[in-house]
Image (cartoon, rainbow, N blue to C red):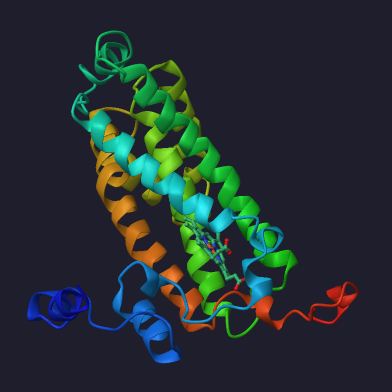
Length: 251
Ligand code: HEM
C-alpha cells in the first residue's frame, strides 16, 4: 500500500497538480499558499488580531460577495432585457410575471444593489475609524474611494433601465443636478444623456455603462484592492497592540 501511495505521489501527473509536499513544515505551508490561486489572495501569515470578526466586521468581503451576486443576477436579467424605450418597461414586467424565478432574480439584483451601497459606506467608515487608511495603505484608500464612486455610478445608471416613471424622473432630476456643475455641467449632462432630455440615447448610454464599463472597471479595481491589502502586509490590525486600552496607541 505504501509503495502504491509512493508511486502515485511521485508520478508526473500527481506532481503536475500538487507542486509541493504535505503542509507539515514551514516551506510546504508557504508553498500551499503561494501556488494556489485562491489561497494566494491571502498573505502567507496573518496576525491573530486581523482575523478577528470585530475588526473588519466582514464588510469588505460582504461588498465583494454582493458584487458577485449582482454580476450573476445581472447577467441572467440581460437574457430578457432589451435597452429600448419601446421594449424595456414591458421586458421588466414580463420578467416579473412570466419568466420562472424572474421576480426573484430582479429582487435579488435590486436588494443586492441597495445592500452594496450601504455595506461599502460602512466598510469605508470601518477603515476610517480603525485608522487603516494611513501609510502604507493610503493608495488602497484612494482605490477604495474610486470603488465607492463606481458603486454609486452603477446604482445610478441601473436606476434608469426599468424605464418606468420613477426611473425616468429620477434620472431627469439627477442629470439636471449634474448640469449645474460650474463650467463643465452642461457638457457632462449632454455627454450622459446623448441629447437634451432623457430618451433612447440616454438609455443606450446608461445600459453600456451599467453592464460593461462600470462592472469591468470594478472587477479590475477590486482585484487591485485585494492585491494591495496583501502587498501592504495584510490588514492594518496587526499594528494594533492587543491590550484592551490600546485604542489610543494606534491612532
Ligand atoms: C466595491 C467596494 C469594495 C470592496 C469589494 C472592498 C473589499 C475589501 C476587502 C475584502 C478588504 C479586506 C477585508 C476588510 O477590510 O473587510 C478591504 C480592505 C480595505 N479597504 Fe476596501 N473594499 C471596497 C471599497 C472600499 C472603500 C470605499 C474604501 C475607502 C474609501 C476602502 C478602503 C480599504 C482599505 C484602506 C483597506 C485595508 C484595511 C486594513 O488594512 O485594515 N475599500 N476592502
